Length: 119
Image 1: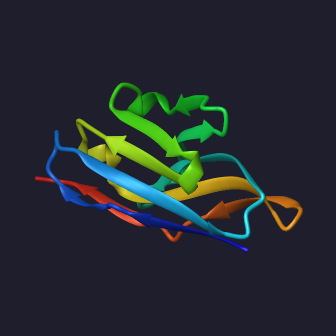
Image 2: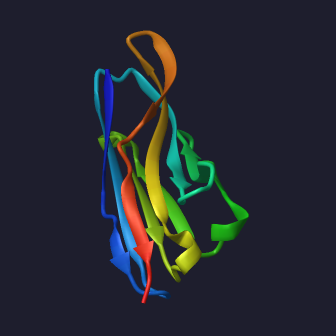
Image 3: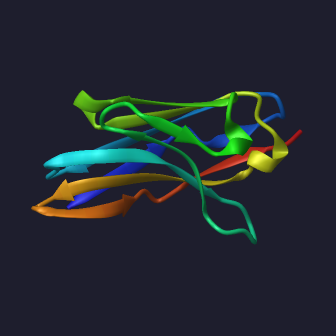
């Protein structure tokens, strides 16, 4: 099994910054990619950003230039630096990983962390 534990959410004013962390643990053979999705009330879950084991990244258009994903492969940890936050960034942010665990490739999700951008 694989577990993803997120931290770093909270309440921030518009224009502020937050940094999310997600640590993977368990019997992991290989992590192919990690990333972040978010889900706002009444909306579908959407991809925010992801990073592959090789370091390739992609971002949603709405966060380009404001959010940065990074990874520490040795620690199986991914970070999301969020700057210039806007009220529309308010959502539950979910960590995601595509990994090989016990010989099987699959998608894994964290429990989610709330990010609220409000004055």
